[in-house]
Length: 496
Image (cartoon, rainbow, N blue to C red; front, top):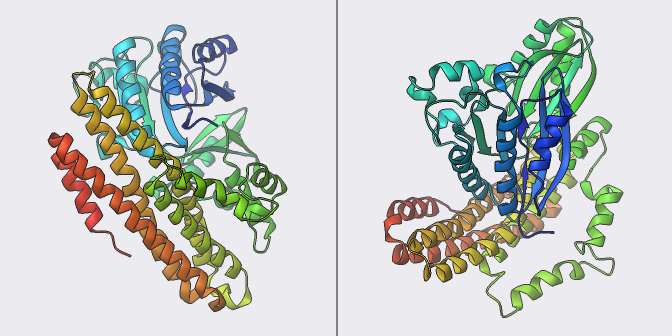
């Protein structure tokens, strides 16, 4: 597997002409980028392309895809159910392996600048990459769609793009680029053509009008049926099965029922595992009980048949090797991940037991959050090593470049952000573990004690890495004083 792996899910305003979609995909075929999925919908008149690849390659692929869309699509002739503002409507980057959300923010900003420069298409940044809070929400940016933005971009200050001139491309419109977590595009079809019912259900389920957190929704008429179209922006905290049950219950108020549902693009395996656990009510369910998961763990060395030692030994030996990476930052992240794993185990073994039924909700929430933290901390093991390598590369190239100080500063900022994120997650893991103590099996107290100790070690190690990088920033990039002060303030506030 590559050292960095990023997902990109560009949405293009074309769902009826396969030849045009083929041309866009062909433009994005470059070494290091792989096509995972393509979805076309004629009613929405939209396609969703799922790519995965290494950090540098996937940025260029996304830029080329936007350029080709501008060549072959004409938004002035576009008609469809789905809101749109650009031929290439939205281009999100999602961290998968060896990168952080902060890395994806930097990627989004680079891609946005290049799109504006190469194709004269104005670009707006959204979600984690947004420059202002009001632009975090895509709906705020896309309000009025292509026609509304075209009419206001030159005169309304709130419509000023983040990159490019204050005028839309005549046929390609404007593009939104951002960074976010994995999103599930989930649609539920009702046994009625009455789209007003779908719109009422969408209003009830979406967070912005009082519904479920991390759900966006709208109602459309698709293939002759009313469709509740939704985006689940954090399936760990608002799982897909809960969304389906909510829609089903709301539909009953109007005398209709769901007849089917669909996933647009791809769905994380964990989301389906959650749904299976919930609907089947499997006691003490864990993803390792799934045959394919257990097999994959054994085959990749994460769980050795000959004992646990073989699974962890390669990492320990890498730490012992006379190389700079992996180092203390990676070890801190690993300690945090182990802390989250231990705490999750304790919660899972108490959930569903008679003595702890009254705490079912708290235990389920803890398990979901700890699973998310565990994955993020595991990703930080490689991200920390990669950030160190980038710092070394910046120092080396600075000798041959006029903007060496800026490159060093950017690399040191990244090398500071990764362990700071580890520290923040370690504090959260320790708090959850402490909160679990009175509501879980008392015979497992030692496991929670170990989890808290590991979280403390992760915090201390991560903050040490933060401090050493801030010292280097102060010395080698003195213009970044505001960043240094902010990071030190955040670090000082962390305690376990």
